[in-house]
Image 1 (spheres, rainbow, N blue to C red):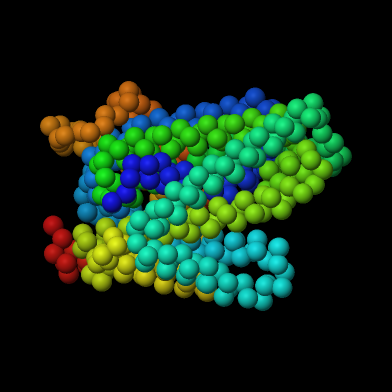
Image 2 (tube, one colour):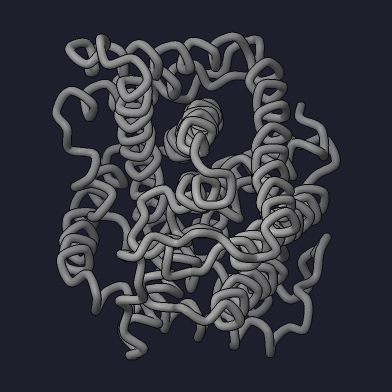
Length: 431
């Protein structure tokens, strides 16, 4: 069984990713005003916290590991759960593949001689973390607890370094003459920046993947999720405040690792190596957590008759071992085939729909089971539920509009899923 603190660690570990290193550069292409820039980080952070404060009721009422799959199946039934569950599992395997490849690209930047062995190195790294899972849930959870603390320290260190740079430079740095604001104040540019910040906060339901394994039950998972999300918001706001105080936003426009550029401007070089090492640490930490998550999605699907019978076993150390192995094999195949980017595009739009469904699921359960025990009550409900559902719907529609291929692929996935589900239903006797 996992301790209550793991809920916080899981949330921090999945949300903090390369987005916080990259997103400021994307935002700076459209926003030059630091007040507007900070308002977006604070506003989206509050919106995510409010959304989680609603979804926390559904988390608390679903004391079963499996994350989004388990919650959607609880609120809507087997088929919606099947669609979201397999989408979620595919997305995690694709993300593991992509992050393995990106991690090796960063390693090669430091050690160019390893370039010919990139694919083999990516497979070796991801295989090592799959093996770590077989060492038991307690081992992988302890690794994640340490990794999440490390992530928090990285963000805090970056913020303190930039604050120090602000004080020693008086807010004035030498900006290259080529740096200029190239963005457009139009609605499309603003929408893209909002979407970028939303994705940087993504992963706030991470603790729900372990709901059946946390000692104190669903309420502890819900509260731990909120605490983790609040810590992340504080870290993100602190870091971005230090960023806009120390460096003019136009100087970072289009920078792929904007924090590296900021450190170089403030301290005159050397920031790139630190950010590269920070990115590598984050990617390594994600390997551990996403294997834990992917295995639990597949295990939950399989125990409900929507996956392989072979993936229903749990080792004496609490690990769904066969589900880990299936996930690992899928990740390796994707690394070799190089199809992870396509799969991530395929499921993007369904993830936006997933957030709407989670919030509406609270309405659904209150209507279906008004007398059911509810360990955690959504804050300000139903007003907060309506507001957040509409907000995620607008974000989802914008993502679909700006990325029509993803929307089309998502629709195809929905159409394909129906006959597969009914085949499984007839074969496995699902009610």
